[in-house]
Image (cartoon, rainbow, N blue to C red; front, side):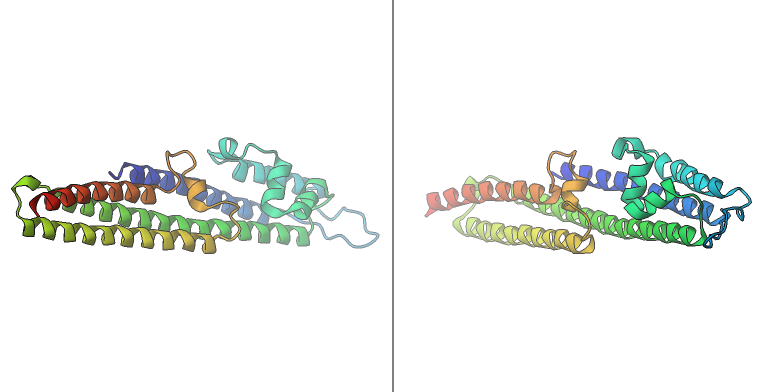
Length: 247
């Protein structure tokens, strides 16, 4: 009954590994950029103050990016873009152009690159928090569904034909309570999904559709609850027919 939720938990764990790898790569990139020498450019002054010389620090910054962010294990499979495309996506067009086409790494440019790396790292940190909340939501729903399924199975301990009218009526009432439990789990899950949308306003797609694109369903908890609701409806129908036959 909870196989789809198990698959979703696996997808979240896999995504978390990827995001953590990018966070660590950005941290390493920032550290390497901080160690680069810079050249201060003043009007009319030749670019001779950089001991590396001036253009080499920019090249080292580009190399650092390729060796960190673009070297995470999942990069080719998930992104597969060029250095220019990746820099623009992470840091914006202007900063990417300065890194790719500039003549020297100035203190201002180095500070801007480091600030952009910090902002990108912060985005990953926020995403990791969302993924942790998603994993907690899935685990809670999985436990709730498993408990509800076990309780439902326990009701089928003897044939309906051997039950009295009062027993069947009590069973009918119990199914109504079960449906309320299903509805409660679904409501809580929907609130979590809506919370993800407000937590990640920059994400271009629904988080569940993004995380579970390769799974059989995009909303595994709600799909599982729908199946459980169908089981409840069928069981309730059998009880209704049994009640009618004893009336």
